[in-house]
Amino acid sequence: MTKKLCCKCGKRLTIFNQAFGCSIPICADCFSGQSNRVKRDLITGICAISGMLAFLLVFFLIVMPLLFGRKEKRIAAFESHVREYLSIQIDDAHRRNSHAGHVVFVDCVSRDLHDISRTGSPSDLVARTPEEVKTIALIKNDLIEVGSYQGIILRGAGQEDNLYRDYIRQGNRLVAFRVDSEVTLVDKESRQLVDKTTLLGSTPPQKIDYVWCSHGTYQVFGSSFGYVTQRGTESGIAGPSPSEEEILLFIRRTYRP
Image 1: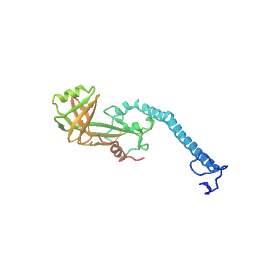
Image 2 (image 1 turned 120 degrees about the vertical axis):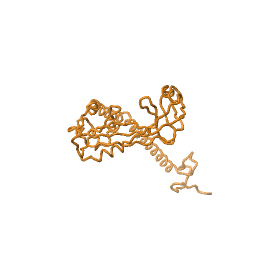
Image 3 (image 1 turned 90 degrees about the vertical axis):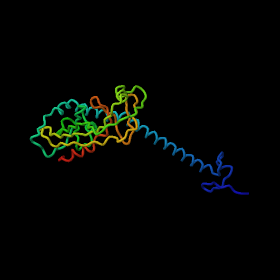
Image 4 (image 1 turned 45 degrees about the vertical axis):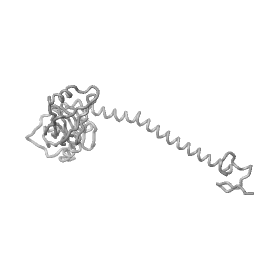
């Protein structure tokens, strides 16, 4: 007669010590210990998942609103000074060779804070409060005509911009624009000009396959990235403007902390 042995501890199994209802030969003591380990691992996993969910809940319901609230307050503090920054009388006769940072970036076209100041990054260069401002960066985007498109196909759905659709249907040309950024750096206290340059934007698409319009939003499909814009009564396709990295690289050229 073959003796049954526990697959875990090797103990001889009898009617008194065998774990009943189990498909493998195992003694009651080993089976009980294995069950406890499974239960312990299950409880540990549930606690870990619960802790992670609790963290995410606290982060999105408490931490994120606090961070966004602080950002909105910081932006609101600057907005009352934008007119002051735009109206500064620049002293071209006496130039400074450097600036000490704490820059506020202002968009001269939208007459509002530039995205760089809205994000507040990089922190070593961008002023965090109006009181910190030592240097003003005036950024003005200009649409430069570099060509035109003919026979553009306009596809769309929904309530499109009728003015633009009619403009295309009348056979008018679409202007190809390059977006250049004029950046003027001014010392806030002395009003002296620190530096000035024009950064060239990317070339608009060489070829436009069609323009898709949906509920007033346009998407350009062509040889490269482009977007629909308007200068006066002329509609056109523009390439990307100079990046924030290019603007910051120019600002750092005369930065002396």
